[in-house]
Image (cartoon, rainbow, N blue to C red):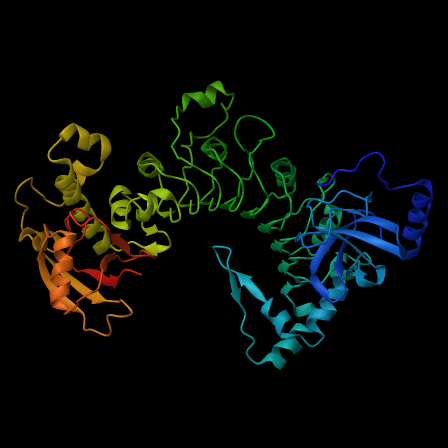
Length: 557
């Protein structure tokens, strides 16, 4: 930020202050009000100053824009009028170029009784179970439009980015849309919780409310009981956990709570060391925040109904399952508990993509969660072979109960093949060092016995073990290099001990490749990117290549 010396001019003089008060009364805006640019509902900001600007005629409104796209930091020509959040997030705008928004009912009229633009139709969507937008296809548009225009039949409405800033006259909403169950108010000008409370009170059947990208005030006191709300989306609303603790008192039936992008670092329970209440909460979405220690997440471990916890895109470095002694509940004064709950007892889905997890102990700790089946570890160092991490088959073998990994189902066949590859990989690398194997590979002995794999000669069991018993792997070689040209894929049986360097020589012969610097990749089922086979001295077994694998033949760029 730019500093000004005492000799430089600073606003606001008494004369300017008087002018600002008169300007506020004249133009209808007020400091702290949410506004959008006329003609652009998505350019939203907060009014920080109203009044004259030295060197320019007339009255101006100083706005700090949400998207940070302005011209200055609230000062111009050495005069500071306000302090913006960024160096160039603010600008001065003529009052006629700003809008203070419209009422809820006016937005309904605009969206459903006017002719919708393509951009507005693009905003019509529903949220999937994983909180992703699924577009609504307008089949028979006129018929649909006619039905939607009969507001008493409207059960779901998307009023995103329409400049909604007020509720309108009391009773008007309930009289017009009495049966509303789902409401999307993304990207509007709402900021006061009392307005949210008023909307919900007038919509007694409302179950789903999306307030994403509304900058909400910190004062929540006085919010009525929102008894019918089951799903509440507060992504990018500037919510703190202290506010969440107050909000939960008004949300007795909440099942899903989405808090993405709120810059949360810590979770501060109102009392005790654990988050309490939320007796119906099944899904908590904390993606895209700043949480960097697992101790914060452990504060959620006693939410009894919690089934899904979304933690993608935080700064977590490790995971562990807490030691738990049921007798501790009695010491903590929880004698009234009907039964002792294990930490995260009902958690089935844990999404950890895009963090900073890099140790195998974190992966192994996931086996301690009693009912965990759906895990995401993509975009972590531990799951990126290119950064020293481990491939998909390694993860599957170490995670005993995972059924969905990184969004892809783990079939019984993939699990069996992954576990066999993993055991053989460990046997090759560890060379019989039993104690070291137990320490580094906790499931090794279990899997070795499960699949009947002996130290020297595998048992000729069905499926994967039988194919491996012969010492030959059936692999498909597929050319993908741009200059190699179209060549038919080849299926070959190769010894598991074949090195990467030897395979390159064979590929040169198989595909008649000359003067091409080759690189090979292992393409694995369920993995978004193939694994580079970058060690020419390592064998196919070292890389965990199993039967029916596909190896891509590419060229150095």
